[in-house]
Length: 168
Image (cartoon, rainbow, N blue to C red):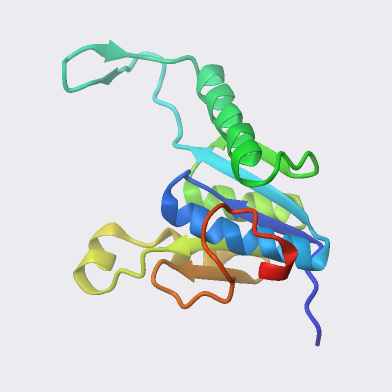
């Protein structure tokens, strides 16, 4: 059975490890002519009566809309920098839990493939930290490609996320 995803989801936390998975998502987008969705999930906000205290004991609160606007602008910057400013890429930023937000978005947008990074931790580190990638694999409504940081590349070359199609 040939697999040709029409809609690919790449959730990002803007880390280098996440950008590594982004190269895979972008190559699949190019190879299959898929729609690429890039999302960022902001941890659920604190109740209005609470504030976050920095180590310098300076209370900081940001309105919810400012957090989401900042995340969306960061996604636009990522697309400009790493995806040749591809205007066809769909972005979203919203509040929620990582794995439930990703799986919910995938269901709501009929995503065919989710591409996520993992640190590949095992043993005590895995038990203490948990694994968002594992939760996504368990609950996703579609196949999930989990990209490890030390994985052998099938993408030729290094550098920006936007390799030419012949390097995918």
